[in-house]
Image (tube, rainbow, N blue to C red; front, side, top):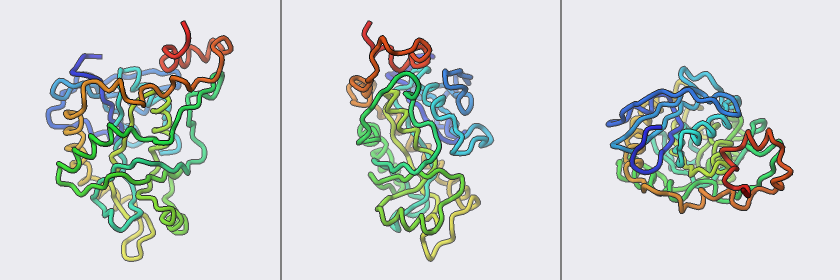
Length: 292
């Protein structure tokens, strides 16, 4: 990949997010991974000399549902291209009166209510247990929050994102249950994305774009695709400004961040017990953590 100032930043979100002011596209890269192809080609370029890689989460034309996204391939592909930090841009429903449609939330916690998704790279031949108590990179989130606050858009620092399986929106009873848990937003995509990013030793943080009040609000219309898209079109422009400002504010070196050493003591399988095919499949992730 072409060089730039400091480390490469990955952005996962809608297919048009790469249209940032000053972003120069260098190539569209089709990447093959041990876990199959990612959602789409990755758009590689520079923003004022900084290397940025964009990945349309659902593929151009929105071909993948939240349940069948190639999560492992997506994260692996970003790491293959030298990405060390991942910014996830996601449409969410608000679970709090104070988070109105159009507001931006920077969650610091997740609750996983997904049912049938590959949630780890380590499920066949290698066992690893990474810490996930703080699932969002605090350093990256702080930069995003600062950029959000400077943008003038109403923002909310911290909060819990509950991730449901979908593709249906939640029932009214589920929505009320999640509200009783004190969650801030509801979505369908950030898990297992965040789990896999931690296993890949990548910094990960979310820009959550509030588009609706799910179906709990008695005075607001229930969530619908039409309503989500209408609000999302406005939110995306705000997100682009936040992404641009954040990338330009990121430090050149994040190697001291704890996310970058998540596997240091996590691999439980003895090196001589790791099958050759598993070692090859996970080479990019574990080679530097195994004795030479």
